[in-house]
Each structure stands twice: as C-alpha cells, then as structure tokens.
Length: 587
Image (cartoon, rainbow, N blue to C red; front, side, top):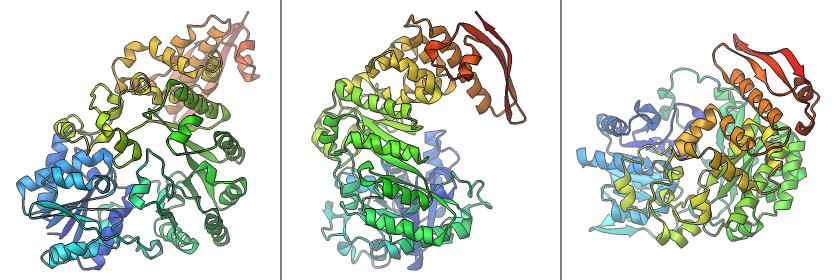
C-alpha cells in the first residue's frame, strides 16, 4: 500500500521514454521516507487499443495497489484521460486523494479546481522544492502546513484557494539521480538498442525561455527564466548514464539550449576536454547560434540540431513575436548542412491572423529548405494551448468542430470523452477550432512535405512548374485526390504511408510537357525501390518503367531525358536489397 502512486503517460518501458520530472519527484519523496510507486500508461495492455478497457484496467490497477494518493502528471494529449482516471478512482475509492501536476495542470489550475470536483489538489510549476513539504503536510501532518506550499491550489470550505507565495526555482545542479526503485524493477533485463547512435537519451540540461512567442506556454510554466546546468554537472550526468547503462547518444532537453552562447561554449569546451565518446543533439533558436558556436558544438559531439522557425512570413514572424530574420535563418541552415549536421526544422500554420499569402510564404520556405537538402521538416497545425497569448485572446471564438479531424487525429479516447471536452472549452482549447480561411481550407497542408520526402527530386521538379505558387500545387494534390481527402486525416495519412505516388501521379497528368511520362516512370521506380528497402520480408518486383536508366545514371535534368523505358528486377533476399537492369529500350 504505497503512500503515493504517480501516474504518467510513458508509452513504453524505455529509459529515453521515462518522464524526468516524475522520477525526480519520486526520488525526493523516497529519500524523505515515503513509499512511492509509478504506473505508466504503457504498462496497461489495452493502451491505444480499447479506451474503455484501458480506463477500467488502469483503475483496477490503482485499486489493487491501494495508494493513499494518486499524483497525475498532465500534458495536453492525455489530460482527458487523467481526468477520467481520477473520476473512476474517486467513484470506487473516495478516500484516495487525487493530485494533479505538470504543464497542463499549471496552465488550467483554477478552472480545473472549479469545474472538476474529483481533483483534490493541483500543484503548479516546478515541484522539486515543494513536493516533500506538500506530501508531508497532506499525509503526515493532517493537512497542517498546506497553506504554506507555494503554488498549491486547494479547497477550503468549498472555495478554491490558491497559495500566493512565489514558488522557488530549484538549483538544477543539486537535483538527484533517479532512484532505481522507481523504474529498474519494472525492466526485464538490458534494454535492446540502448547503445545505438540514434537512441538519444533526454538529459535535463536546463530550463526556461526568456522569449514570449504568442503560441507557446513554455515561458508561462518556467516563468521566463533561462537556466542551464553547469558544465561540470552536464558532463557528470552524461558519465552517469553512459557508465551505468551504456548510453552513447543524448538529447540535451532544453527549449532554447544556446541562448547563452558563452555558457554553451564553456559546456562544449569541458566536454571536449573530457573526451566522452558520445553524440548529442539539442534544440535552439536559429538566431542564437553562430558558425563559430556550431563548430564548437560539433567538435564536442553534436550531430543533430532542432530549430523552430514557425513561419516563413516576415509579417507573421512579428505578429507571433518570434521575430526571426528569415534571410539569416536560410544562411545559417546552409552553414549547418555544409557542416554535415542533421538539421530538423519545425513550422506552424493556422495562426489566427495568418492570410493565404502568409501561408504561401511558409510553404515556399519549407520547400526551399527541402530543396536545399534538409531531410527533417515538420509542419504542425496551430493548436490553442492553455495560457498562451493567442488562446487568451481568441478563447471566446473557439468552437468544437468535429469535422476538423486533424485536431483530434491520434488522440486516444477523444470520442469517448467528448461530453467532458464539449463542456470545458477552457480546459481543452487545443482540441477546439478557430474558423479562418487558412484553418478551414488548408487543414491537411501539414501532410504535404511528406511527398517531398518520398520523391525529393521528382516532386522538386514538378514544383518548378508552379512558378512559386506552392499553395496551388497543394490544392491540385487535394483536388486530384479529393476522394481520399474526403475520407479524413486518417485516410490521407494511411495513403501517404502506403503509396504516396497516387497523389503526385495525378498532379503530373495536369501538365502536357513532353517529359511528363519520363517523370512518372522515374517516380514509379523510386516508389518500388523504397518498397524493397522497407520490406521486412523477401520481395521481388520486376517491371518496366517509362524512363531511360542511362539518363538517370548520368544525372541529367528530367527535361533532357530521352524517350525510352527500362526493365528492372528489384529484390530483397535475406535482408539484402538488390537492383538489376534487365533491358533498356530507347527511341
């Protein structure tokens, strides 16, 4: 019978999937003599399979353990699930105390306490300094001292009360390492692939962002205070996980790692001096890196960097308070590619003030980056997360439009929890829609860059035929495959994964240039090569493709391809892919 059962959304038993914050709080409590257990969603068999079974099995597991208190870590994709679990636990065991914490609860604490009677307490902000005093007062001192816990929301005689004392920020260099009792007992032997270069163990390198982007709640949660661990502590953390588990790749978890360039340089110098033999990646603002700093970071082992560009419109850069110089961003991305770094770019669209012209600028910027050689480009439909500037400003205009399935796609339990979602807009604004031309007409644009990933050279050439009107290119894709798009986001995603060629083939048929047959033949060939490469079983594809392989081999531009066709035998046997040219016909 544990004192506290932490529940979080960890999907699988893997060290790089564990929630650092939960394990830190649990470690602090264990050190203070509390009995603590951890329950992950991924440990419930029906998770992501059958929602009602998942809720029932999770509740049953809680009641089997009979904790005095459950503490739910909340982020927006799983908030409805945590609320449902709390409701079921309270219905079956009213004596179990329910506590919510994490980013989502911090942003919606007042509303949660006012509207959700089965949540007893909400703890906001960083919890490392307050978790022990809170549970000491709650479970050992009969409630005495709860009024002194900073940032705590509670009920007093039926009224919601917020403790107004300012919550102290913790000293990151003094944070403990996870207590083995919280996680190792759940693991069955060494984790496969833990030493691979692409494993990337998240490492809490620092917290906070001093910027005030209108769409982001990070500054709200961390109080706009930028902090970075000392070089000595970062290296000590690397050594700890490397030596204990054999991990060789790390993700420095920080929203804007490189804001203090001098401090990051010191971190890199110390890592180089220690010769750690590891790879790492980080997130950064493109205006907070220089070529000199990037060289130093690469020398220290950085192999990948993630950059939030958000919009390719200069006007929107100002409106969302991102304020990036897009010309400089292009130059810096080119520098990173020349340095052979793996670059990931992140964009958003569907901002309230965004026009079609703004959107065309963003799509153009994205496709230019793909043409430049950036492999990883991510485009997201803007959500209205709690406590952000745009959410506060437009809350009254948000509507729950179930036809906009791009918002609900992949949200496990969305349909089952619709009544709660519909009644609590302030708690679930991220699932609500704001009607505008961009948001109504371009819901599936976020899927468009995937076509570039599948056919980078062919689609790049097809793009040139649109002469800068990239949105018309997208509209033609939708128009030519309207039957697929009419079936919704899941159908579109499934088609892109299964055979994206059908989208671009139909668009190619809109043009009558003499090289179109060769272009289509080349795309069919690329599609089948990918099928062979991705196949987990032995596979043979033999067929004719409407282009001359010699032109392809000589790297001619598509408009200079001769009229011809090539017969290939593509195969995969015993995990080895092979390609043979059977015959070439030319005119």
